[in-house]
Image (cartoon, rainbow, N blue to C red; front, side, top):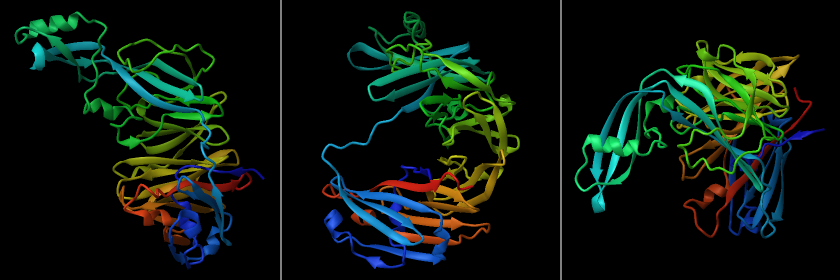
Length: 444
């Protein structure tokens, strides 16, 4: 029976270590100190039937691996071999750059610096801004860069700028500043840190939602330019063509308009101009999951990765009930759990699966009172684990199992040995290094 392990979001595993409502002090031989954990349970622990969580608590020298289910807790202590590192895998980061279409007006200014130099600035009101999409992709011994003109333009007027240092004997006039900029035609206008156009481009730090526009199926990378409906032009899902000879080029030079590498469109997004394209993800069996927001609210759209064939849509408008937050996506072989966590420690979470050849939401959206780090759905029940607590402060680890009702069938709150290190010391850096929900392929 094939098992599924999600290793990340690892601070939950200790939340299940005391699955009998007991107190223990079994940590002394593991991490050099009297370490206790305490579990407070509500409901029937039998609700954990069919769910198995594994995890490990590590301090850099030793680690304790855990396996927890409805029967209790099993643990095993292991010494980490010197120099052992986690295997590296394919990684990628998305980004973008902008090119002005029509420049409506330009304004020049100068601020004095030392030694007769001035920081000169050009601010331009521009329209029909073009969007270039960028990726950096790397794996052991191989780092590549990709950039393409998306064909998307923004018809609104925005302010872009450029600035650099130049030497003048006297404070420069606007004409002299303009002449200096004209001497460097290769320079391009760019965004300011608070430019409102950033709210129309997702998968960047300035956007409202923290989502990913890049998904991986096997060794193949797929992406979509994540933009709001304000942009005009084609909305597509692309496959990154790894067979192309990519140039050894760094995107640190963001001023270049040069295309790097190649990508093939696999799907045209229907009615894409009426949608906010928020993100792209993938299930473990290779279905691409496009996250969109339109007139009817938030929805998942599904595409076959091999040929881009459209497989349907599942609307979940209530999933965007928070003012902002981070998107979480936990894939299965034929479905996923997903939702948004806000800064106040609340997560809206649902489960979607493919049953009978049709995609459908199999669990209503639930508001969980913690930031979810892992979740899985099985036989009508949704299990999720996560944390509460401010960054840098001790974390409380929580677990909940939901059935058809709004109240959980089972929930627990645990203080873990990792949390007892607060305030943290250099000598002992205990952390929950891994969490995995095991799930068999046959669970529908």
